[in-house]
Length: 378
Image (cartoon, rainbow, N blue to C red; front, top):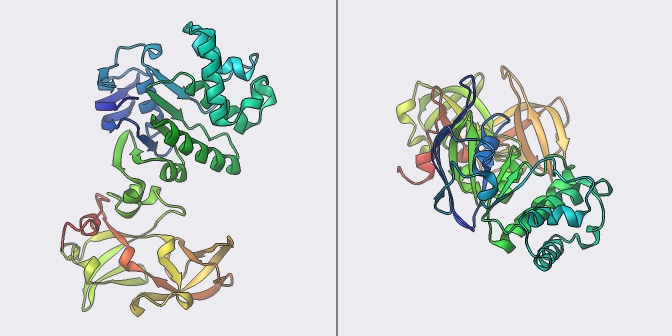
């Protein structure tokens, strides 16, 4: 396996469209890095530059310490799994998996051994004589992964490989890819727009927007310590609630006011925010930190509010409640305890656990609380 490294890499298409901007990134040998972001953010272009399917406009890409900007795709020792599987319809599963090895004139016995080994790993032995039209979506994806495995490449590249599968199969294949990484100890780069896939698969996750990498970190660091409003809103499901308002001084800390909603930020949270009193900010709070006060008492009484429940979604293990009342112009999404099923269009007492809230600058949208959360300020 091998380390993959980007050094000041940019990609500009004809017409001046800049898809990737000044990417500095190291994928450590044997790690699984996920590139995640909305459509058009540059994640697939970044992956395709590793594969050699897109030329690098500026900067350098290294695989295993070798600069590969001018190396042909077939000579980069990578294997790629695409969204559409790209299986040859007239070939059996066995021949689809063996095809690349035959082109490289590997001995027949070695081809047989590699295909059988990959088939056993992916539990598709009984499919080897079928053709792609006889496979389900999940089986076809396993074959596409198997075709990559037999190559024994330095680096595996996955370009949204689960997008065409239904929800149940996506979960199943996500687990299989995680197991595969564990067994092979391979260097993998995985592109997805699905933040759940990113959080569950990646040992490191790079969040992209408009061609730039916003933050690279472990999944939980991204969740707990987002660097800006975009990362905070992209990571987490349902996404973080954002309220635009102002900070003011209060006897018991700092007060946040948005329309007719006021929340008191205690000393710990307020300690790094006093310089922003009177300025516009965004308060971010995750749905799981907004509770039905009947089942959650560990909160400042000043942060218990009466708000109307407009939509209620019981999910079995939890209940999603869409709250709106007074002068609020947008929903606040809360994730209530499963025992709580408030009536639609009825008022409910809601507890905001602001000890886990995030505050972002109203202009730059950069986090004002990240340093405090990481213990960098007292």
